[in-house]
Image 1 (tube, helix red, strand yellow):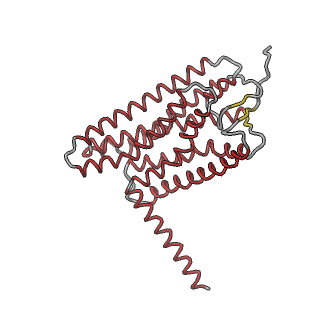
Image 2 (cartoon, helix red, strand yellow):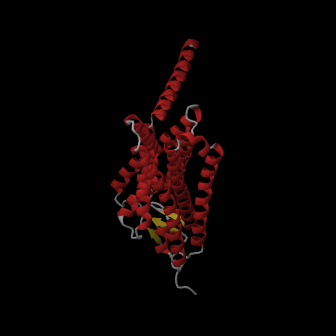
Image 3 (tube, rainbow, N blue to C red):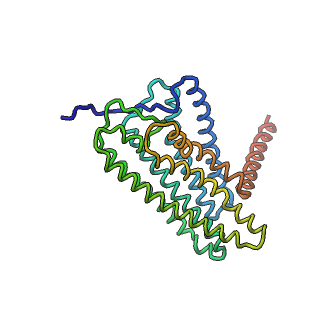
Length: 319
């Protein structure tokens, strides 16, 4: 017989134990969450209704915005609940489910960012062959392939984690559940789990990182060989938004999973960066740096303003 009781729930310590700080954090993250939902929904709506945004780049951007909506919604609502709740607990099954979705959606986003880097490479380095290289069928394969690979990767790690026994009153020094945070709470041998997640991360991260670095190496080489300054500026502007998002996401995510789990504030900072802050920033980065998205947003807002103005005028005429 084992001399421990199996846990049925975990305690999420969150970002702070101070009540006043928790109140401030609740307001701040509620605003961030609303901005995330609004910004990414706006990007999805603009791409959906504007006929000019039908290129592969905007097809991938729409999927990125959808992923950011999911990514933020997996962790932020539970964090907001714990910030105003006395009992900051989460069931073990719920924690494992959250870890699965965090790993699956995060992995899909990493693969999609690598796919978007390849798309920019095809557009800048091979503009005459771009239509053939990035056909509608191939774009669909790249997107659904990213989803399938990431979900399978997360499912393997989740099934291994389900077989673990967790000690009673396990405390997670974070605001959400991630696989590295669960291993110290287990009373079972986690060597297989640790090996699996390290292998998953190395294969996943190295593949996406090499594709991004290779694509941007070719892009920068092509841009530097351009004779026209205007051509260089236009080519760089088309990939600057994506490059900014890549650095924000990959930088914080890689540091989070490379660092040993110790419950330090730095770990929580990196988790917040790639799972909460980056999904909020992505639509603003793309809308501020992309002239076509800005123009489409202005057109959509003008149509909405005109529609509500017409409705108001009809209402006044009836009165």
